[in-house]
Length: 167
Image (cartoon, rainbow, N blue to C red):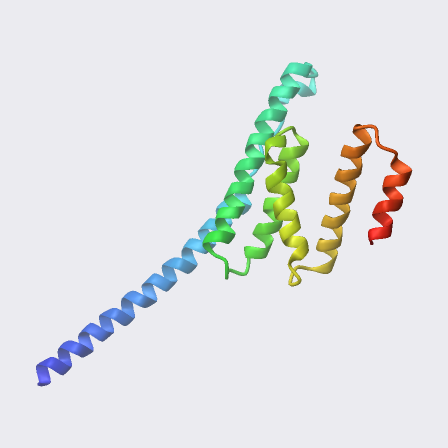
């Protein structure tokens, strides 16, 4: 009987030790993932462009490369807040994802526009998100809509009045 108690105590101690180590590893993983995310940087323009301006082709190629890097950053940010939803940096990772998608779309990765719109709408609908951020995202959405409709030849005065009336 005494050996059974000793055995159960030992098993309990091992279980407690393993659980504590797993939790520490999860915390460490979140910290490492956050550090990896915040250390990510887009490649700078070539130094040669300081003396020799790039051609249109070189500039387009560079923009495509930076757009791909921005998409990678957005994916890392999404992976972070999906894997560590309760981490203190999860909300910042959501904002980082949106900013990276905005840059990618701006640089020409328009195939990610729907992802951007979905993330922005999600954050706008999140009542726990800061009001200023939600307002800023709403303005971005309106501005993007107006720009698209303007490019298609729509009457901007009528569109503006319609948008303002909704607010």
